[in-house]
Image 1 (tube, one colour):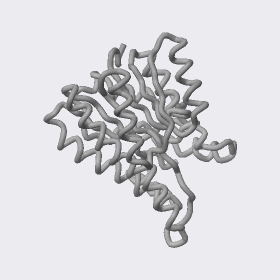
Image 2: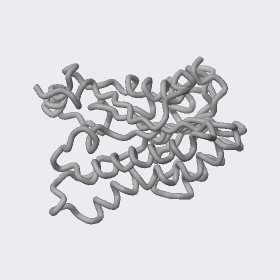
Image 3: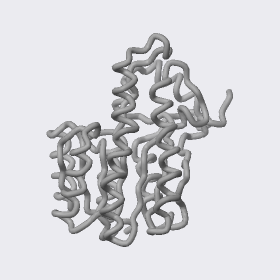
Length: 250
């Protein structure tokens, strides 16, 4: 099992990519600390994992809060004895529109959830991993703001591009401590964030070279690789798992 004996934090774990990651990582032997805002969904996923022989704990909270990032790490240490990895996956798209017309509140909200949360995560996760002699951190970034500038997504692009910059610096700073840090850049994925507009989904499928959207499990499996020892020489990367979105022009 690729994560056997490792304790992993997953944020945004109540649905979509995070929920898929929770089930896949548990099946690969990880002990999980699951974080999100929706208690009922987190509880159900935790119960499902336990029913299948896995180990998981959950903590409800908001990744915008510094104290929540610290509490997730403390839960990992108190419940499972330490922290070996983290999939910092929680995020929001925010309201779409040109930057000159964008409300200040939307900008700050998108930054708080998508970028500031990464700062708080690293601030508490890295010292915990240092105690274990190493670890692996994965941030969910995006091709938006890295390979493509999508109109109306200025705040989202800035936040997700910021995660990549932070990833590179963290990887350089903490590589000597055997702590790897990578960013994962998914393409269009069939999650609640994608909505249920069939026409919109058809357009998005066309953006990809594979002419389809990803299933959440496909992105979760990419995160699994980065967190596992199979990626032992991978750090500071912006790993694209976007179905060819970035290179497709037709």
